[in-house]
Image 1 (cartoon, helix red, strand yellow):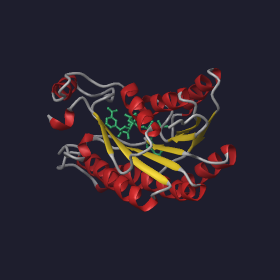
Image 2 (cartoon, protein in one colour):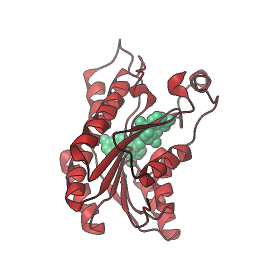
Image 3 (cartoon, rainbow, N blue to C red):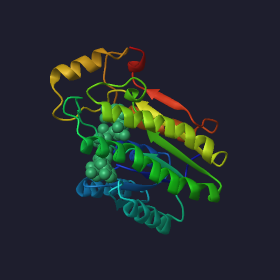
Length: 243
Ligand SMILES: NC(=O)c1ccc[n+]([C@@H]2O[C@H](COP(=O)([O-])OP(=O)(O)OC[C@H]3O[C@@H](n4cnc5c(N)ncnc54)[C@H](OP(=O)(O)O)[C@@H]3O)[C@@H](O)[C@H]2O)c1
């Protein structure tokens, strides 16, 4: 389907994978709401890039673990563009949580950011999309949501929750709103990821290489433009989930 003129809100859209998704949706003719939390300078830069290429875009700040922030963000997006047609839940946290030292605070931070915030944005916007008659929610999951990593237990559980949430919301919000998820493999490591971990992760893919943020963005665009999928999980992982 043609998504030209659709309004897309991308959480965590100021940099890294979220930014690639923002740029790809803009190239397909979407108007963009770029959400950021702490990356104000990167969000400004992204907005400048979009506007100088002729795209309509605004940036909105929110801590998505706070309901009042989520409400403020959605109200501001709707006040500006009149609606939001496509929601991409990309904001997340990712850090090691070995079982011997995993704290309840780490557990709560990870689950609140990756799962609860995705639920809040999806419920609040999904119900509006239903009354508007059309909408599409695309959640960022992870291969770890299907095969948990012991040293990233909180993260893996949060992404397993995102996959279950995607399926449940697809049922709850049908037929007006479609809800799908993407499970990326290794795309961008954190700066402090040791070389041996990078090498090991790449070796675990069937394609023997990293993906790129643009690979994920291409998948998000493909899903956004596909008209007959809902409740589905799309892998873009170089075969990592089979290895
Ligand atoms: N990178 C990979 O290789 C990879 C692999 C598999 C899955 N994924 C998933 O793909 C998505 C994007 O990946 P990424 O690596 O680009 O993500 P990321 O850099 O880890 O995080 C994306 C953004 O989340 C935002 N965020 C964190 N806590 C927040 C909070 N409390 N409220 C609002 N926003 C918050 C941050 O915004 P600010 O910077 O503005 O603070 C951050 O820029 C994530 O869902 C990730 O789990 C990534």
